[in-house]
Image (tube, rainbow over all chains, first blue to last red; front, side):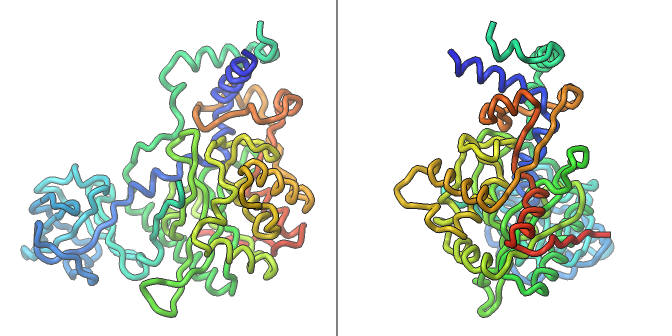
Length: 148
Length: 282
């Protein structure tokens, strides 16, 4: 009974003191990381696609606007084929199965290319749909849970 | 009438009643993914890269690294979260090394937390309030055992890890353990291996770690949480608890918990590290 009262008091305080409570643990930590849709450039398409280390020119020209040509689910995730409007040149990237945002991609979506020090950011309507890290980016990214 | 509830100010009870009636009472920060903007990714990774360069240049092998995930200035707190950043051999590049951050993360606003080893990019991509990093370089006498513990594959880091989590956990209790608390208790283990006697419950080890921290003069931050702040606060739930705080402190609005700022003030004072270094993007 006593523990129930204690728990009730703690619950009341906890709810009311919300703002400082968020203070130190910043509770959130997994949200943004899991939202970064890591991708790799690929050659080929669909099940035959294979990752390549070098980012194709089409995907590494800052400010370029591309159009989603096809979106295909594979055993490993999703392969997206993009086409450059100006000359029809194509390039593909592959998103991992757990990457957010792939589901919302559809043929005809406009994709903007941003080149940063750590790789290439592809975005649609102001939101990141894929990040293709270069060697520098790969050295900065790692996510591993320890133990249970 | 329960005695404890009777002690609560009427305004608090009223507010609680209002809050409990709405869905927000179950809120807290969840795992809902929110889309990142290209600017956020660019800035976060830029901060990570600048930090990497500065850590490389520092000559340190391990540092206590902090980020500013939330605006806590009204509590006199500048940084929200810390972990240990350390060098480890780069498996993809013989002879090379990479920086990894070992830290404790609360899972989606739940009442539990786990340890993660992440890259500097992951560390700084997490919804920052300010694109700013800060770190303390421990003395060589601290770096050596701490690096060995961190590079040891996990057992040392997990030895004092306690899953039940409260963001405002009492610094001298073993009921819950928030992220910064795990870090300094693990620092105690690195410095005093007898803290982690095998076969003992984690609570007993943590008690010894906390005794070492007290012996070394660590003082937690004291947050004064008054009624106005309570009423103005937004709600979280599962990851907040106050029942580990001593009654006389809790009901005097004295919440003593481990903050980055208190750790950064303590380490130089105790001769365990240098003054904090700050790096902010313009």
